[in-house]
Amino acid sequence: MSHKSTLICFVIITVLNIQWVSAPPISDKLVEPSSFWMIHLLKNLFGYATVVVPAMLIIGYMKKIKYNETGSGLCFPVVKSCVFGDDNSPEVIAKQQQQAEGDKLQSKGCLKILICAAGLQVSYLTWGVIQERIMTQEYGKTDSSSGEKFSNSQFLVFVNRLLAVIVAGVYSFIVRQPRHSCPLYKFSYASFSNIMSSWCQYEALKFVTFPTQVLGKACKVIPVMLMGKLISGNVYELYEWITATMLSVGISMFLFFQSGQHGNNVHVSEETYSSLVGTSSGIVLMLGYMMFDSFTSNWQGSLFKTHKMSSVQMMFGVNLFSCIFTSCSLLEQGGFIEAAQFMMRHWDFAMHSVILSICSAVGQLFIFYTISEFGAVVFTIIMTVRQAIAILLSCVIYGHPVTVMGLLGILVVFLALFLRIYARSRKTTLKQAASAPGKI
Image (tube, rainbow, N blue to C red):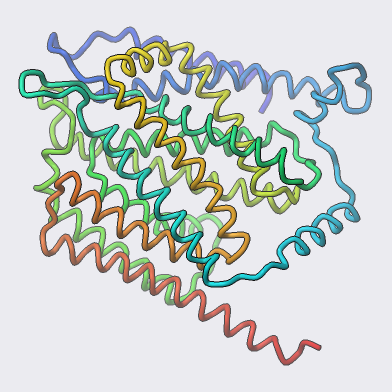
């Protein structure tokens, strides 16, 4: 992207932000901030643009003058690491891979699997319950007063990323990591998409129930397959299409037969939005979550493949830029002051925010460790079980009614997920068995 087009994009974002912020309210009645999620989105994007645009101009200039070849001085190592990185030779990469494989020569007993499963379940089940508590329930509610809800989703993203970057930094300091070769700015792409996916996830809870959100996240394989077929021409196995169809049927059954049960959990006033618009907002936000989350995983996979970094290094780099983006945006919008005032009025919210951050950071460490030790299939099974338990906990704790047909839709969704996992694992096993006789 040229400097001219970058500046044009910056101006457009600024104009849109001013237009939306200065727009008069729809009515004289007090309207919840959550009703205007598009305004919050534009304000957040403007805050990120104030960081991204100057950084892009500086990076473009440094590459143009070939600063890595001509630069010197105290700032040179920092600039080189941020913009150009350190190119590792094939010999260095091979040595790092051999070293990593040697570190993995440990026993993989049932105890370690149980510890990983328990850690993931406790971390993310607690995280899900606290997340729904913060975004859907009122704080300070008594018999005589109505209470108030916390609406700043970006602040929750910030506190989660802050603790995660601290944990990853401490871990990297204690445990030796591979030599870092990736330009730091490349983490910002995954960081931005990660922020947006988390923000969409929090905002969606204002319009749809937590069970609906969990099922929607479980079914993100459907748009991924369709886009892969249309854009990349990917070829999928028959079992993939069958399980994708089962996912579609299951989520459709749940949404259709539960449509009349969502009214008590959609926090959009009737004066502002109709029920249809509120539901549409939830669907749009869930689609945004799927889109950004898919980009995050694909971009991280590309960085892993190209630069051979460790998972903890990835965790540190992505969360570092997430903290930078969200903190700048919150400072510009006064989000820190708003959150601090809310904490002063409701100390239980402060406790919930800390627990949410701890669960998120610890959960990320369990994710990286489980995948590295036992592979993606074991991890997927554990997280699929976690999604089913999360729906059950949400219905029990927060009283979401589930019809018989809605429950049947949930069972169809998770049956499809387990069939998909089994078929993929079976296919991998057959391939390994077929290639085994040829090995010496």
